[in-house]
Image (cartoon, rainbow, N blue to C red; front, side, top):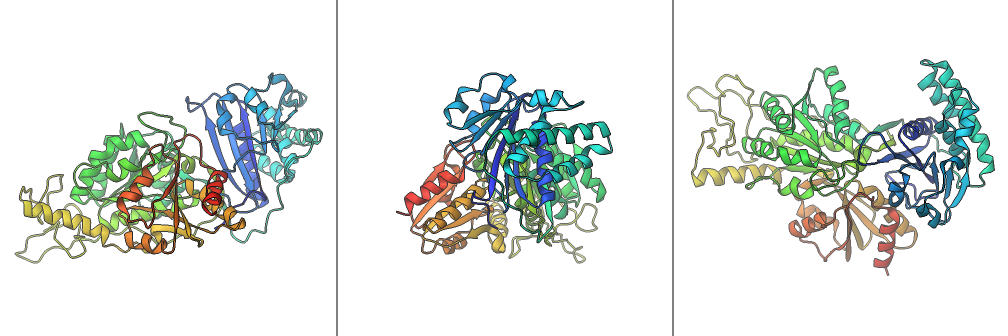
Length: 578
């Protein structure tokens, strides 16, 4: 998959206080873009109060698939300035940008004036008042569409689907507002235009990463979820709460994260593939439960939609700083699975794969998503429905006179697992070290045998080509993961156009490590750039600690909440390519 390099895309920020309707307008814009044949990425920025208050809808619209924000916004539209200055650092503008604001909203904040962007006025509130039931957000929607050359017909079609059956007067007022805004845009001057959409060769979806995560879980065979709501993972639970009953599954809103993970382990012990979803603070609480899952070899999947930490941090912003706890957080020697999606679409596949791996290897699996993937909504090509469905090695009743060995020291490290009540297959499943039959033991030989067994089943598994996404060739390698992948991919494309060839390696399987595979991918590489969203460079330290890299890597990292942008990675690649 390739992304727009910028020439075929337009980036728009729509801002306003609570109730201004910028999110409603942006969602309608995205639906219309899908109808018209475009691709898009839509994220949101809000204040620390999470719901209500000021908000910014951030939309990048293009003719090619888009998996990253751009370097700057071409249009910034402010219905009002209440609290918008909080987003100044997240809304980079240039001299080629245009700021559209209502003259009644007062003075333009200094940060936006200093950007050098062209500032124009559009009386959105007055235009809306002239329409019975009119709203400024529809004026804004029509103006933005006209400025970039977006067709009005898909907008009115989306408005009809959304409003016509509910309230005809609201539909008529919204259509009138869009048309009034489009007409008024003629007075605002020129702006960057969107190209003509390409013919649809595949069906397209509009979906968030969190909903994709829920879909991947269902496709992977999950039939039980217990979870406690937490930003930015709650949408995973919203999806599963309605989807699971449709496939004969069960959803439980637990009282807290400890109960959530333990309910899931219990359901898994009973034979059902189980999942829970949380964020960093919740993962911390689940760690003891994950140790029980690992020691008892009871599969469970935990989705961590990462946010800015530590502690409560910034709940509505993205960061990749849960890597250390995900990989190393369990006490004792506790090898387990950690996987990470690298796009909205990949949230579907990676979660499904994570369920498959957890079930096949009888291990806990942490899926490290993040806020930028989980809460962003994108127009994507419909993903293939791959055949990864979690299946356990099922135990059979032992022959007469034989003792059932739940934790038999097999060559693969995987032992047959019964369901409770299966004749002849009774065993103890707890967190104590045990013999092959499950009997608690303190013997060194038993401990070492079980340690080796639990490690062997992970390191000996064939993960195929799914361990990483590898694209391009060159003597420079960009190694990244998670939501940084989209920006890194676009930067590599830009560098190639400038004569600097680089290879993109985005890890999907974080643990266990694949030293031979990464070694092969890095053959001929003379320079390495690691791109991540972490203050301490956790991913860089992880790579240097777990892999024998051919050269010392350069590091491009910073904490959230600011996203990694293609331009800064591109600039570093050009410098490295000299």
